[in-house]
Image (cartoon, rainbow, N blue to C red; front, side, top):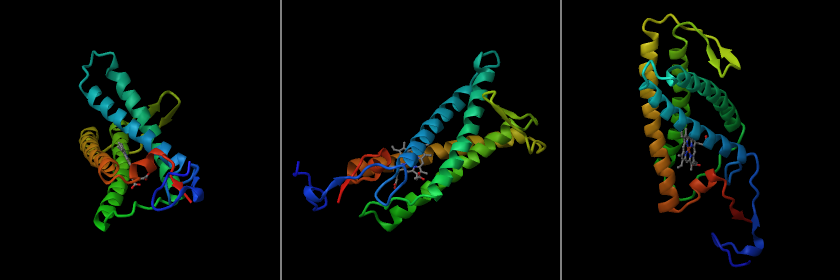
Length: 204
Ligand code: HEM
């Protein structure tokens, strides 16, 4: 007690800042953190499942089941992403760490916005593949999402190609995004990653 020191402040004036539901200027709140890591996990899972299932033969027992799971999770992810966008818009965004240059700041914020756009385009293109034959998407047998547009010539092939290239682009951007987060943590030694992990800060 009493020896911890960071940023020139000494401990008697310090208190543990509790992690609340909402974001603050100091860091992300529980809900933004939970949504970030849930989406990251689901996106990696869907990518692996998607690549695996496209290599299955017609006689494989997973030939139909795997795409059904992929589509159902994709639709649920769409609703999670809508909730995330609403939550983000109704919350303050934490301040960037001091010392991050203007260009780096703009690149990071641009990449975040691009990730949102890519994710939505990816889910929309997936919807157009699945509904190209006019049939609705059954979500784990709980509810169905109806087909809307299904008369575009070669819809399934075009939407399939768009979906694949968007997925590759997303994974590439996520790779850069994760590498940047690790650089902040291990090289710059700032709080960028800690903020997204919910590691509390000590402050006055
Ligand atoms: C599919 C995977 C991922 C997606 C789609 C994604 C997306 C995003 C987005 C949109 C933000 C901006 C904050 C927000 O709107 O919530 C963000 C922030 C962040 N992400 Fe990710 N992310 C992914 C994976 C990762 C991984 C694997 C890491 C770490 C290794 C990571 C570390 C961070 C950090 C540290 C922030 C905070 C950046 C800051 O406050 O400047 N993300 N992410």
